[in-house]
Amino acid sequence: MKVYKIAVLPGDGIGPEVMNEALKVLKTLSDMDSTFDYEITEFNWNTDYYMEHGLMMPENGLKQLKSFDSILFGAAGDSRVSEHIPIWELIMPIRKNFQQYINFRPIKLLRGLETPLQQKEDIDFVIIRENAEGEYSTSGGKMYQGESRELAVQNTIMTREGISKVATYAFQYARDHKLRKVTNATKSNAIIHTMTLWDSVVEEVANDFKEISYEKYYVDAIAALFVERPKDLQLVLASNLFGDILSDLGSAIAGGLGVAPSANINPNGEYPSMFEPVHGSAPDIAGKGIANPVAQIWSLALMLQNFGRSDLHDKVLFSIEDVLEEKRTLTPDIGGKATTEQVGDAIVRKLQKRM
Ligand code: NAD
Ligand code: MN
Image: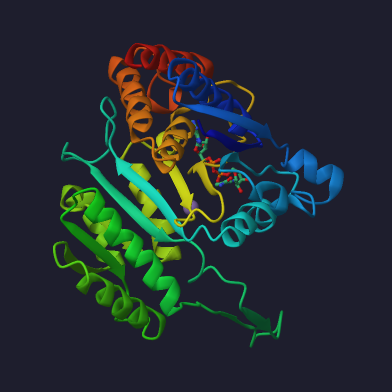
């Protein structure tokens, strides 16, 4: 039987608090299912580590991570270092070097949760965001600093191969999950070089999937659609920047940051994929024991799905919903009084019943 090797990076602030609960869920699964086993290795690569070593991870950090089946990440960042350090020294190197070119975010209003939208309708779609190139590049520069003619240039880099890979993943996902439609988030009317390439490659891929309908919307119009008619959406395909912004909007209509999961996927499995909540280290509530562990536990479920264990993914997600629907054990961000640990324990108890 395969023993999944999982690298655990709890990070800073509430990261370790919510990670504890996810690891309880993981242990419950392997205790109760004789066909599932795992082994974890924990890495303390966080701001404390940075204060001591001047680096977010050791020089050979990526090499250490490479042999794992998967990476489970908490959140990184604290006021002792500037915000770009954990992003550009830890998270981005992992995403880019391990070719995690898919960022996958379910926008699903779980049973028991409330949306702030007026129409109380089903919200259940996914965002597939390009995660390795596009608007987030280090190409560009600044001139004439401090002068009145100061200028800055930031380049967006899009490649046929990069666009084709994310679009193909999106259409294959749609086909595998019996979705009827893919919605392309674009802005080719105003961004005439990169976004027109994006559209034409996405359309080429769409032509290979005739059974799935394809529509193109400007990203600003999609933002409105998220609020006005979210049930019309099934899969939104977006570039790095557009997908980033749309996914925060998506989490806001579906219960908030405390429950929003994400996956950074290397589809061919050559490198480990990484699973992490959308939220950060939440310094305002760190140490109080009241962080919502649902986002981290749902991220763990996405990892199980990526292992090919949709059965375990579903059991974890249903157990989360059982707890949310009961409304007795909720953290303050979603209107309750429970602690992080109480919510984790409640999910574990529901899971034990479902196994
Ligand atoms: P944040 O997501 O940490 O917090 C935003 C707000 O949401 C806060 O009020 C926080 O209390 C609340 N919140 C977040 N997660 C919650 C949870 N699980 N339960 C209950 N409430 C929750 O974003 P921020 O405050 O902008 O950033 C804080 C730090 O985290 C910064 O250092 C930032 O750079 C870092 N950050 C890291 C990541 C990451 O590791 N991927 C992502 C975003 C921000
Ligand atoms: Mn973001």
